[in-house]
Length: 196
Image (cartoon, rainbow, N blue to C red; front, side, top):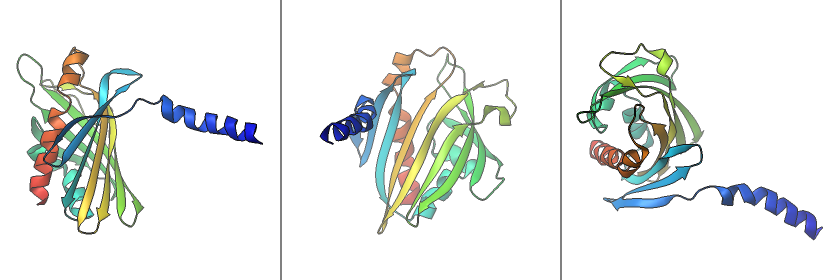
């Protein structure tokens, strides 16, 4: 019996230990940003955590407001809601201003909101590049995925945001990884300002 338990324990726990660990890269203004390496990519994933005084619906409404997304997203210069086919689905376009000589980027974002419990919801993020025509002025970012996790804790909301993507073009991975905390930190500062 002990042998079976040992084998089951090994099979169950090995994948968890085999995963790469999150490393804290920035802890400032009650915003924590972690990064970790991904086996299938040279570009790291990031995870951001923050708790703010607010209610879950207020946070959700800001995240899914495609027409205002550019107001608080780092380097964003334009955004718009393209479609809202159901109450919990959103298709958003956003343009990003990159420094010269880099070409500006754009993204088409699919958001799907689902309630997990009475006090928690998750917003899944996926690229939806084929849902909107490409524009000459921008290089389309075609791969990214992640989520927002919102949890009501009395009069505060715990916000967790995790993402992994590729900015497209020929940006070296070392450069992307060296600047990977900049955009999420700015975004969370701006989000906090909008909520409080």
